[in-house]
Length: 248
Image (cartoon, rainbow, N blue to C red; front, side, top):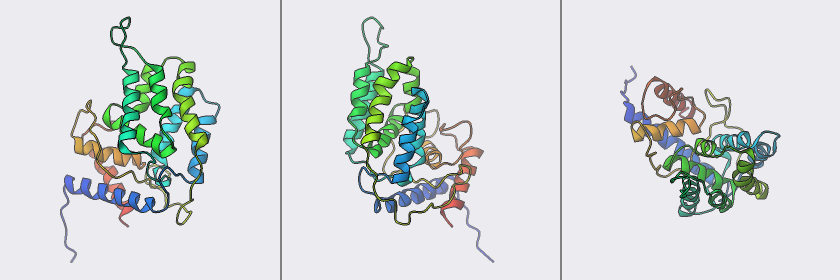
């Protein structure tokens, strides 16, 4: 008779984090720093050059970052450079002035922060760093910019420059998909290893939030509550799906 092993919440979190991180390490052997494969580069070019308005383009780029991490190498720039770019964007969004009583925007600082990035992996790492440290990147930008023209000039344009300058790296060791992720219809997309800075606006447990971000980034549905720090039924089901997908 098979032995039944009890697994608690912490065991599940530890197992999923380790599996996803190890898959990311394996991928780094294929793609070098700052590299993306040809298919991923095409998806980013489509996201930024389609006929959508600037807000939709930005949202498409953020989605492309979250959905294509498997096909990217590690960032080209250092962690400190990525963090500096994220901080510059945050400071630009929260720049105060005497006539706005502290609630202003320094669009040039935002543009310079984004323009300091050298590759798509750097851009995606900055978006993740920003979301982990401050607040969700797209929501933060969306709430601060009202004009399509301003968003296009100070945010979408520098992102477009990064994408257009990017060159495709190797397609991958096998050149084939690793199979669909349950609930997403895409392919499993491991996330970068390393520590995650908690969101200061978080409502729940920081460790659970880290797990939820990993699951969400890899295409698993964590429910309407999103990254809320609550290890409820939706997060539990997503965790079990991840285990079934990766631990075959």
